[in-house]
Image (tube, rainbow, N blue to C red; front, side, top):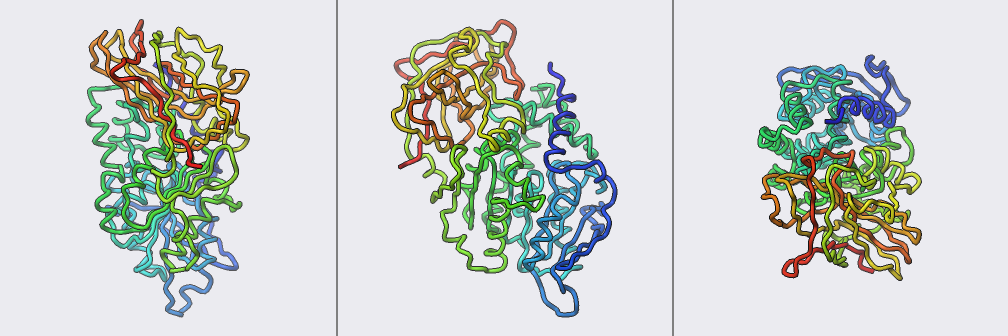
Length: 524
């Protein structure tokens, strides 16, 4: 068993540094004023009277006896972040005529209570903060919005399902399906869960339920799998889709292609099922890195879109956002945006790579192909286009299955979700495999395009069974003269593997059910 706590502590410190988390944030922020707007630090009574530390930013001249009402935006903080997280964005919003209330989610920093992980108390807290804003600020009850990054995004979506007053949401780097986020392919996302758990212990007070769930998750206590899934579903906005649609809030979703905590697939699936006004934006990066610069006041496309979204849906500004293609993607390979009418149009073309023959590999050995390091690897891809790499010719075939396409004469613009279909025979009843898609240059060096894990249990040894696996969605341009390669092995530091000692996996392609990799391509 690996050492998840050590990893969690280290990763939490890296994450905190990347997003501007300072140890001094334990101290109460001083009161401040600005020439254009005012900032107040207040205590708000959340669900059950739990004290939530908050700050309120109001437009210049608000509350001066004018009787004017302003649209209000509520911002729950991200996991492990202090209440000053959104202060820069809050002041920008106040400058343009919004009342903004940002609060520290319960269980973190100086807010009371214990960490509920977007449970019912967190959802009730959001409504209590709206109540407070309407009673104590010049907020317009008909123009209520919510937004947040990561944890704040999840809480905002859940609140939109339970509070009809919420008219618009900007959910950035969040989740719609918690199970598909950190337990996709029924495989524990080790580094993601350990990062969240470690950061929670460092900056907050995990409740007994979270402690139990995290312990069972990281220790692979499969006897409690049903409880863990039920716990995650209760905290998944996708489980309340009917309520969200009935309430009709305008929903904007933004995420990064390489988000190692909340991969983009689950957001795209959720987006397609939304029935009200909606927008989906994907950009290069890892968890919350697409929004990070905006928290410091630097130019940021994600926050610009969020402001435009609120301006249109809360203030009625005719800024054209409703006439744009609602799905906006930025490729990892180019600098421009691409617009699509819906998610299914993203990968309208499909190229199948046949996975012929039969390959057998030994489990429990890392072949050298892997998905990188949580937060770091995809941040490097975002900043300098340097994703994880592997030398495809040098991968040991005893531990990795490898299939390659022909060399392409023209660029292949991969857009959307690649899908693997194959037949597996295991010598043991359980096991884990990880699939990787690489862009392979003339010298055999492969750049990671996407990956995804898959775990099985209860299979009859020696009996073939089909495997269907969706790789994490992406947008990547394969240059002319390159080829695509599918690599499958059984160990990746990002995930917990379930391979018994001595296990072997055989990948075959029966004539009646051929194996293939379906690659979605942009329609030119």
